[in-house]
Length: 259
Image (tube, rainbow, N blue to C red; front, side, top):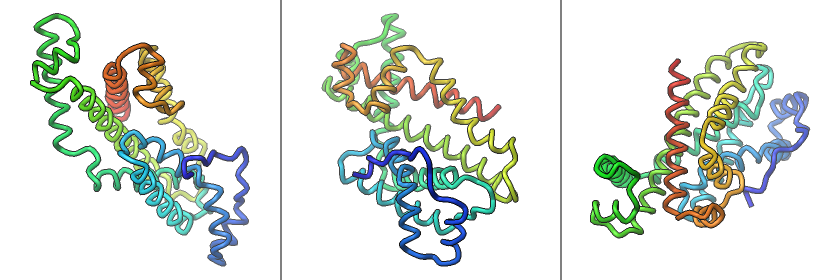
């Protein structure tokens, strides 16, 4: 299964192997390199897993990612001093985001429904001075209560894609800044980890509930229904917590990068 590849503790792809591949373009050697870096595919496909509607969608994402990873192997210049996994991770993430955009996995209609739900939530909060229930929102919007949970999932998908797009843009900008250098300076090496560290710091500022949902959803890979059972709340509530957490991270990351 394409999601089963873990990052090796020690990568055996040395500069000598890259040099040999550059000279020979040997397919067997390329496949050896590919196998060593398949964890990049696993990691990036997992991030977009919530957006997929079926196993076939995930397989399509994996296929696109592997094609891009092979392209990265062919284009990589080991002399630049940039780590291959840094270079390839950005390109593979870009291929996935581009594919999701083209497939319209977060369609315009879903965005409209999310906007209407948020407007309804705000209106009922102002009216009652508290968070409205899903039943109240359903009555206000003249929808079946089950539709509210579906819209919240659509909102989570929208926020995930938006956050990935923003992080991708930041990574591309950073890569462009260092790709023409003859060697990576200590400052540039620190820059490669800065965005990841900042995101981890921002996650620490979330509420315990939000951190729990994100951990169970992304690290433990539980479904919303399973998280709801573990936390003793409704599925709709889990979706709401997840969506708000992603929205907060997106807003904070945007502010960080603009400063």
